[in-house]
Length: 127
Image (cartoon, rainbow, N blue to C red; front, side, top):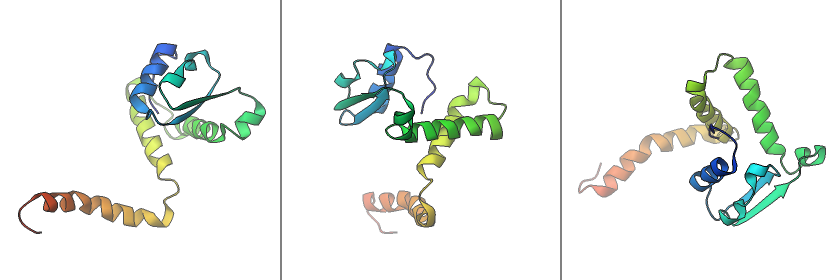
């Protein structure tokens, strides 16, 4: 997620170029700012917003947006534009780790020792 200055075709294209791998399949609604994205990704699937598409094809998008809104209105109720991107970073971080569950401690240990493992592989001595 990223704060965009506006939702124009140019801004959306720039965001897609910077953020999404060219080999990705991109699902969007039929917003006019999302036209011609096929040239930036492997496949672009446009879905007309309807109650059915909200429940099926774009379900996780709507869940993520509603959870973000809930956080911004409830927990972080005094969000300023200056720090909005930081709140988005935190939300995405938590969302991406939502299903780690029991693996979370192991991932923490790996993340803590990984820089040292990389350092020892590049140096002439063993740690």
